[in-house]
Amino acid sequence: MKIEVVTLFPRMIAGALEYGIVGRALERGLIAVGTEDPRAHTHDVHRTVDDRPYGGGPGMVMKPQPLLAAIRAASARLPAGSPRICLSAQGEPFSESAARSLAALPGMLLVAGRYEGIDERVIALGIDRELSVGDYVLSGGELPALTVIDAVARLLPGVLGDERSSAEDSFAQGLLDWPHYTRPEVFEGLAVPPVLLSGDHADIRRWRIERAIERTRRRRPGLIAAGKLAPEARRVLDELLAAEAAAEEHRGK
Ligand code: 4GO
Image (cartoon, rainbow, N blue to C red; front, side, top):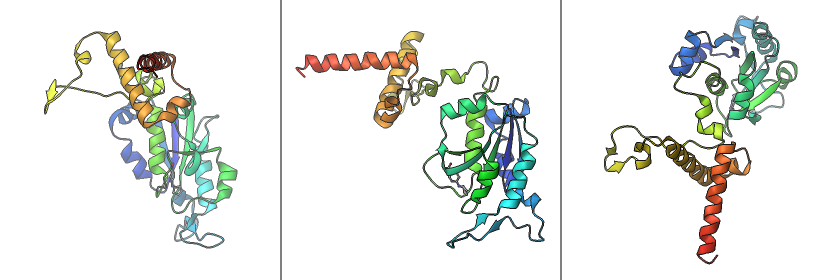
């Protein structure tokens, strides 16, 4: 997959992508990430990329001409069918399912704004969709762009090692993750749950899904209400609910 990022801080993107699974995916050519700096598209001696907001108020706005020129230059390096995406707190929520849709595409352009935001006409002329990584304001779109790149890259074929598959992730089940343990068996008085030492893979799988459901119900009930559970998780949840109803009945309601 070919990715382009429009940013005033290209080294922030390049630097963050050197590490871990995404770093290896880049080395192996499974993804390629380019950057385009709007400052390279200015024509004044001060290389101005921002200006004062019409209507007044504090802060500055990214001026349209250098930003749109950078978007067009970066777009020209991407395959047809690559969406131009702006990261902003006003965007639609980014999610694992949004990452899955993007991972099916040949490329994407990510626009990372700075200052108070970008001139709305750039969105009208050069952006296909706006995404938000969460309900909070950041000082730039670079970290959200890196978040999208990371979440998408690990879904691409070959990016995770043989022994790991994103299909095994709890989010593939529509759930929060289950708890993880490694050696030693007892750490500061806390033991690893015995089922994980049993070697019974069906029991272990069942335990993990149950723990994931338990956490998700407590911390993120909306994820379950949204009815997006994978069939395996749905089955386990239905059994848990039936067991709870039976226990309730037994206690005389
Ligand atoms: C994205 C960008 C938050 C998000 C941003 C988010 N803040 N929640 N700030 O995904 C334009 C200027 C947007 C700073 C940028």
